[in-house]
Image 1 (cartoon, rainbow, N blue to C red):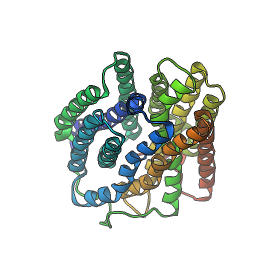
Image 2 (cartoon, one colour):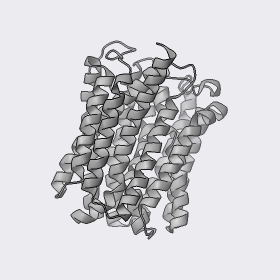
Image 3 (cartoon, rainbow, N blue to C red):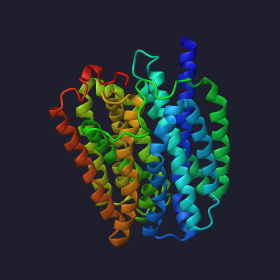
Length: 392
């Protein structure tokens, strides 16, 4: 492939990461508005939010099967279109049951898009001599921050979520269709032998999956509850500011992640990530005032920034599975973080309060610290600092 073609593919895949990040953060930025409009308590909202990760989880085997029959670029485009259709409809949900159905569809289509776009990113990485995978995730975060800023502005202008979501969905669909020709025509299940549509991770991949679980649980909690925490616990006038602070920190962390991993090693970076996650959540819970809570959310953002990209990179070096299936296997465990933890935050908040819920969440960072510390007993599980930023 020529240099121009590689650049074109990189730009195209970057735009699909943007579509994913902007769409998801658009939804997250309006959760407080939708909660108020539908009259949902914290516990009721937690139950409703369960539908999104349920859609993610239940379609993982389907996505694995599709990746063996179709090119990831085809699945990526279909996923992007369905994702934006679901987003547009979310803003017009008039009853909780409608929101549940649409969130399930939103999660299902997001899974198609995300697994396929990560498979594409592995293919693009193979065209470059240096690591660029973390940059893809960084662009996802940039898009998420931009969507949070747009959401905050539209909340201030009192624009209804329906019109907000519809406008964003139309724009993102246009981007996906426009940049689709530049994506890589990778064959199905490239890089490994054909396997059943789903493969459960082995011991090493399971540990990677649990590491991803801790990060995804924190990410899901911040997406679903950060704005509500800022508004109800920290009594900030604009709740979405907390989410924006978190997104800025996560974005910054992802753009410097490769350099830090190369200098200090993957294990050191991941252990530090766990401590930042715990420290940030405890700080926000202990001192629920806007400025301190924002500092805590920034620490959480820095903590979760590099965990999933680095874990996916290690999973891609699995000897048992090729890159795409290995990522899907690790994602299966990791997505349980989205499935279980954010709804539990709502139940704890209902029984006690949001501060206690966030304080309990701090334990996930310590779990990550412990899991990373145990990797030293598995030679080869963690790459040396010199090659920490190498492609999958």
